[in-house]
Image (tube, rainbow, N blue to C red; front, side, top):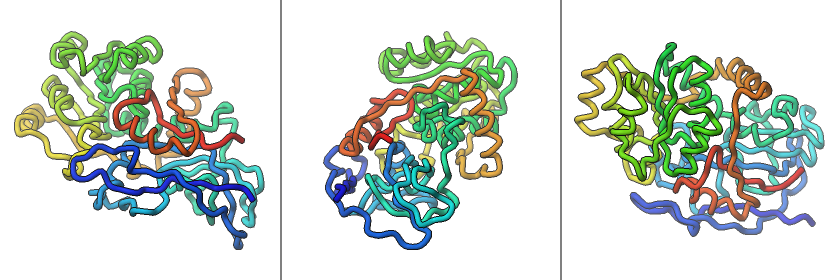
Length: 350
């Protein structure tokens, strides 16, 4: 009998607590029983690890589109890619590669009756890298692309600043900004290694290490004409500094607020009165961005992203942890900034 394992949620970090490895437990679980009509048996190959999952560790997520994890239950993440091992569903055959962007359990083998969120993987689009279904050709890529195109209001000669710039969304958003005509793209991140990656590999015009450099001074140096568009992945003090450098009638793309995910505050979190006044006085838009509000644009957007990917116009970086046993440690590392690009778990090989 084939062994099966899962990752179980065993404790909450507590109010304003950081995730710890002991919040997760890797353990054996039953191998799936016989299939029922229209069900498929799936072997997980890759799992997506996302900062937005942090709110599911709380008793209340603060949002209405996903609920909290329950103590003692298998963790349900966002995306996953797997192989169909057995099928009683006419739409899926043994050997098919499938992916979903929501509701994939952190489990090696599981049974599912596929709904419309389950899709077959088109191997020609991913260039042989099936993990791309969870990074550039996923909700991550769509968030970056649609954030830029729908909320950024980019114009030629614009200056785009991105916080969390070496992360999954930030690293793509900067490249999309350049491809859409930005004159300057500046990234903010937390290490010299990440800064070098942004400028040397991704073509950012400049990068700021917020841990060792003065953000205000560096923004003045890199953005002599001010900031026109800000792709905000972190919130907090970093974003307050960027907003102070923004031009009149500019735009904040409120993608994420990872700096406050460990705090017991509503989402989007409150901002200082000084920052509010700056937004109002300069007529800066700052509205919460949720990619799920743009489903009608998914197909067209993914087609454009795939074209850029296959033509070599964008580069993709992934940080991959090996084995489901390392899912908890990988999540903790990501929340501490240990990843460059998308954080993934390689659960198994084809």
